[in-house]
Image 1 (cartoon, rainbow, N blue to C red):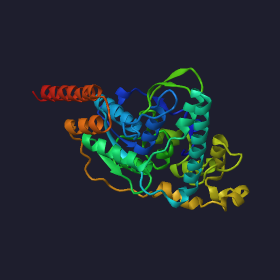
Image 2 (cartoon, rainbow, N blue to C red):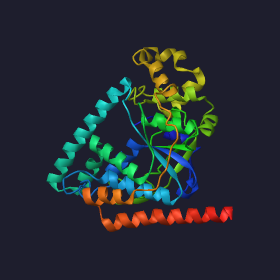
Image 3 (cartoon, helix red, strand yellow):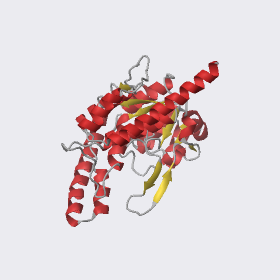
Image 4 (cartoon, helix red, strand yellow):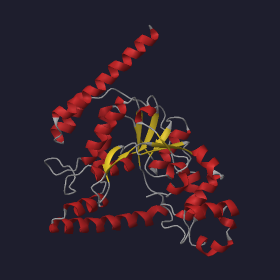
Length: 343
C-alpha cells in the first residue's frame, strides 16, 4: 500500500498529459502496474481474462497494449521487478495475503448470490500476482524489445534509483514511496489513465497522469527528505503498517517541523520503542539496488509476439497485428524526422 502522502502532496501535484512525457525515459514499478492490470481488466462478474488452458492473461493484455501506447507517444519505458522484500515488510505481506484471501471468499459468495457488482468489487481486491504471471510479463517485454530490471529488493527503490542516477526522468508508481526513496520525480496514474468506473457506482471519471517533483514537495512542506521519511513512519509504511494511532498527515508534518526528528518526540517514546524506525529509515536512505548498466530498447520480435500471445495465450491475431502496426508507423515517423533533421 505504501505511505499515504496524498493530503500533503495535493498542492504540488501537477496534472499532465501522456504527450508531455514524449522523448522521456521512465522507470515503472512493474508489480504495481501488473496488479493494476489484473484488478482492472476483468469481465462483468469480476473474472480475469484467461486463455484456453485457464491461465490468467489480464496482466499480459494490459502490459502489451499499454506499453504499445507508450511507444506510440514516444515514451521509453523500463519496467522494474521486485526482488526479495526486506524482513521488516513481512507483517505487511501477511496482512495483504489475509485481505486477499478474505476478498476471495466474499467474491465467491457474491457470485453465488448473483450480485455481479459486488463480485467484481471483491474480485479486484482479491488480485494475486503469481510467479508464472511475472515470468510471462518478462518474456513479453523481451519480445517487445523493452528493457526490464530485476531489483535485488524493492522495485520502487530500484525505479527511484534509476531516476536518481539519470537512467530515467522519473519513477512511475501509484504509491508515494518513490519520493521517500529519493526519486526526483514521481509520475502517477500513467498505467491507468483514461476513463475509469468508480467502485460501487455507475459513474465514470477521467483519470489523468500527474507528476510530483520531490524538490517542490520538500520546499512546500519546509522539510528535508530525511524528515519526509520520518513523516512517513508516523503515518505508517510497509515496514510499520498502521503508523501511530491518532496521527494523520497534518499532525505528522507539524510534529516533524516542531521536533525535527522522531528521536526528539518524548511523548511518543513508548510507541517508538516498539518499532525499528532506524531500520525503516535505512531501507529508504540506503536501499538495496543494482546498477543496470546500459539500458537498450530494441525493435520488437513480431513473429515471437504473435506466437506467444496469439498461438500460446489465445490473443486476437488481428488486434495484436494492429498494435504492432502502430509501432511500425511510429518508427517510420521517427526515422523520417531524423532524416529531415540531418538533411
